[in-house]
Length: 93
Image (cartoon, rainbow, N blue to C red; front, side, top):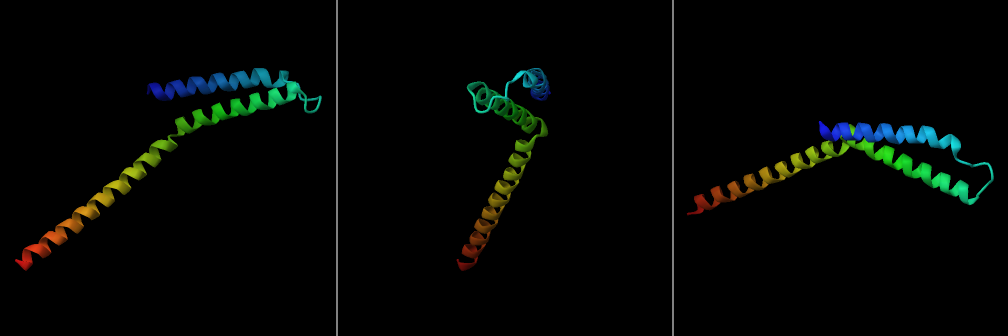
């Protein structure tokens, strides 16, 4: 619960900061130092926004669950394979 709340608060602050700052950035003079800074600032703010949305949507948790399923299946197959070999060894004696 705390992790989700923290991401929501950070996302709201980032969006608020963008709403406040983007209209004040100067892009009218071409490739000036101010325009490059503004573009970099917007890119960084969008990156932070994307990271918090990624956390809120739980994309990484779904991937972890899928990887855990794959590992369990591999382990089960290995156990089945080893049990099959054991039964073959028992018949040879």
